[in-house]
Length: 298
Image (cartoon, rainbow, N blue to C red; front, side, top):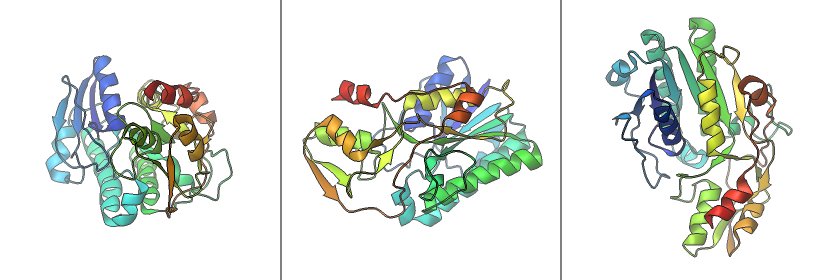
């Protein structure tokens, strides 16, 4: 098939590109290479790359011609940067996503798999977090990403465009962003340990997260893109493990000096995925690989 991956030079997107190429698909990538936390951009010699932004509607319209599936990962993808620049988050995550959907509608794309976020659940929902719970958006990032979810549902319901939304919990693994204070915690702590710096723990460190390995994220995307599976169309599906760890737990696993930094606004206290829909609709049952991953990378 002809497949387009937006944000395909980044951490998650590049892994999806590699998997799709390995399976023999014709893969194109749109990425403007703007991620501040990525220390490197990743390329596959057998994919075709466009250095463009998904907000450039007329420039990018023709790229979706003859495309069968779009994996849409391009986004302003961190909570704290979105707090600093809500307008950019709005432009990229809402307008950019709507552009993708409209291109797909005009050009007969069969399905869009949309990457969303567990930050949609906020603080008021009780654990485990299930897809039928109300949104509790605490920051511009989660507001704009859930707006993208709603646009996907609308295009499915109104225009019969097949969409699937995957809500990622905290993703870690090879190629994870390492740069800046807002890089994901597993990669950040491992880098700080390697550089003989203290690990920076936000607040009391008792925040708990459902840490999900990149391999499970990629597998969920591939299965969500299976055109034979019509049960997933219009659905929102958590991609997590159903177990969680505190930030202090991560620091203990790695070992070494720590220092506390100030609490951050707009973040949830705990996440823990309900994996019922993941098991039922995608036939997946991810388990935590966190301890073994950390041991292998010390």
